[in-house]
Length: 95
Image 1: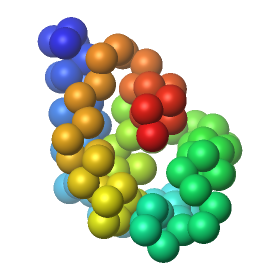
Image 2: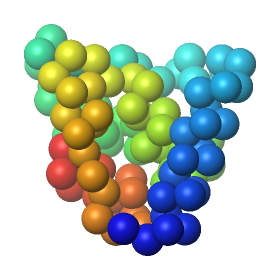
Image 3: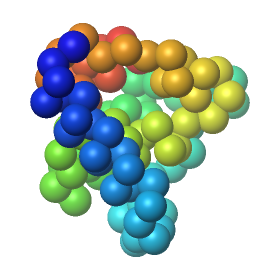
């Protein structure tokens, strides 16, 4: 994996984790694959629109999405290993 990609991802995750909850964070809906009847694709589409509207980078989208996942969705995220620098696009494709 690209060193700059990992560095950027870690910096973004750190910034998201240590920052105070912002208004845009509260707009993200929680996703629990075990309880959500709409499925991951519908959640990703909704999340993607919100991220585009708020002008989140690919790194920010992945970090914020990770904070919104629960149960088996969170387990999947915790073990996911991105292969490219297009994190959000890869996240949607794999999930």
